[in-house]
Length: 177
Image (tube, rainbow, N blue to C red; front, side, top):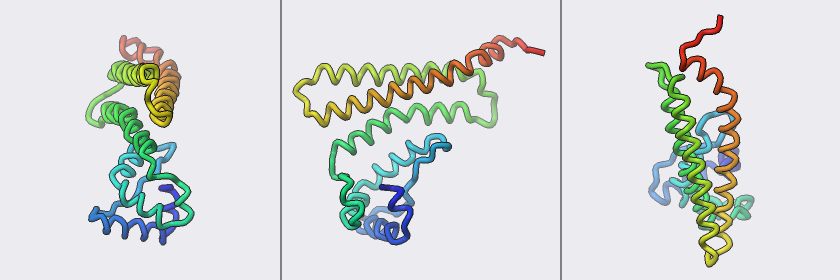
């Protein structure tokens, strides 16, 4: 939906008018870009910040009406995904410092992220098992989040394994000549 709004000057204008209607300072919506770190987090934060104008815009634009933005389950997913992604933003900031070397911090950052993803996975699994009385949509949110956390853990593990040898060599001060 954000892509559809951004891709049309008319839709951007409607969105801006809705921002004004809700007395919210207009900012451009952010697209997530596969090659840009933390862009998904930035996109979700901006969408949540502009929830009311987005809902109103979707109601005014025929091609966006089929997207059920009024569904609280969807906004719950957005909030939970923001929580899942926040530590990755923090890790990026730690490892992107320009004033000091950060390679020695990678092991700690990896462990922090692994622990975070593991905790998310365990927490959502416990919620799924312990809440038989919950609505199906709530369980779908939890299951979707568990799947996302597990996928993130697998991807992180892949990167960790490829960097493990280099980190060990640098951390122990061994130089290969």
